[in-house]
Amino acid sequence: MHGFFRWSSKWWPGTIPLVVFWAIAAWTGTAPLEADLAARSASALKDTVLDKTRIEVSGRDVTFAADAFSEDGRRSAVAAVEAVPGVRLVNDETRLVPEAKPFVWSAERDVARVTLGGNAPLPASKGKLLEAARAALGGVEVVDQMQLSRGAPQRFDNAALLLLDQIVKLKDGKVAISDTKVSLSGMARDLGGREAIAAALKNLPEGFSVAANEVKAPPYVFQAYKDPVAVTLTLTGYVPDNNVHAAIAAAAGRKFFSEKVVDNLKASIGAPSGFVSAVVPALGALSRLSTGTLVVTDREIKLSGDALYDAAVTQIRASLARDFPEGWQVKAELSVKPAAAPVDPTVCQQLFSELLAKGKIRFESGRAAIDPDSAGLLDRLIEIAMRCPTANIEIAGHTDADGDDAFNQALSAKRAQAVTDYLVKAGLPAGRFTATGYGSSQPVASNDTDEGKARNRRIDFLVR
Amino acid sequence: MAYLVTFHWGWLLASVLLGLAMGWIAVVQRGPGVSKAASRWLAALAAALVAAALARAIPGRPGYWLDLGLVMFATYLFGCAAGSWLRDRVLSRRPPAA
Image (cartoon, rainbow over all chains, first blue to last red; front, side, top):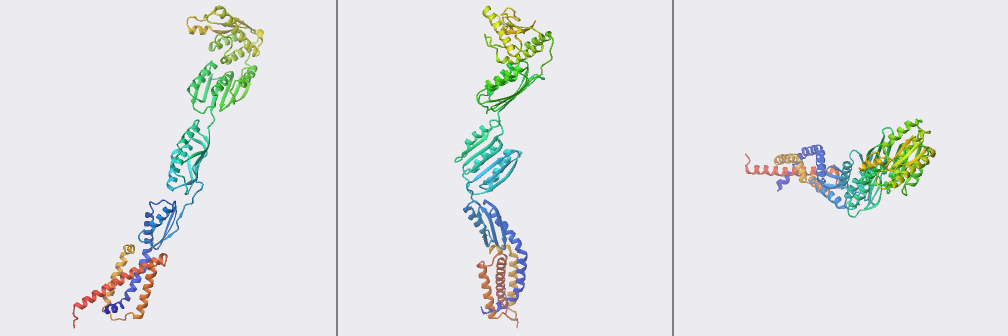
């Protein structure tokens, strides 16, 4: 043993090359060692949910900074780094992400983009929301302004995803979650969108409730355009359902006897109440115009165009003031079409015959009251009568052969008189017209068929 | 420690070999050794450094360098001890050629 101490006193010269080795090892090994420890630490944290993770290694000491989402998560992350082989010390600079109170999240849509803002509970749910927004909105730009925070209510992700599905249905607006309260505002993209959103909100996850749903429906628009050149009536916009669609198409067919009806209507929910009882008389008013446009927006009716003569303007205005359900507003911008050039009485007769071949003046069944659907036709007849001011005109009423002759005779006379009265009310001199009832004595078709009878029930205008 | 060994095994091997060589030579070397007083001081210094390393008192890179130096030094001492012992065994078996 004594020899051992003697030898050891002579080991010192080897420390000189040892120090050299040590210096070289330290010089070349430090950076790779630090990189290796950083990589090991990062991989130890791979399965831990953290935000803003920063790992700096100096020698074998790791400075570890991160935002954790729970105290347990923070502790286990620090422990995971401490457990990395080779790590000597961990400078713990971790902290918890701030808690948001109330926990607010929002998605706002304007013309160009959708902005996601407020708080998100975890990086994963933030990514999920962004991805869902991009997928749902197609080409629309999605801007992320979400911050990570603690304090999200349970099932927050599901609620937010459901709201993101609703923002697709908005033209513009905002959906927001504040703790467990959901609020929505803005304008629905389509008719029915507001109702669809309200229905979808019933599927909100348990615990969430709707604090405010102020989504507005887009205006319910119905349009009709009477084009005198193309001789068409174009209907566009919405009707509540197929029954109303059929009723409006039928009314248009009756009122616009010579025009071709181009029907581009679509059925959609969201119609204001009283839609049919407002649109049908408005179409009647449009039928009396030479050219005109009818726009029904929600409960507002706008009629513009040219009437055929002065008195028609007054009559149309009066009917617009009278015929509409409560709560509807009517605006009429009517002017009078310039009077057509006067023509010879024989031309007048020809015009009457042509017009009456296209459409017939209708009456209520068995009575002498003129059907309002014939107002457009009567206006056209009046316009022709105004073009030959010197001609005297016989207004001849005819019936079919059904029923009692005397009754038919009286009915035809009353109907002819009703038409005459209508013309006089329009401003034509009463002296120019003679009303005559012929009963069933002058049929133009067989009275054996319904079709023939219908042709025999007529009013003829005869220039004398 | 295990990590340092696996990471720097090449340098530690070099330290052992250096120690073996030095230990081998030290048995027959006639030059001056370290005096008792000096060796006590050196032992105290080594103990202080080991204490500092175990207490992790020196932070960052210097702390790592200290650890590395001590591990290399310990390996070197082990090599020296092994070298001297082997040389002694070899000398004591073979009678000196008088």
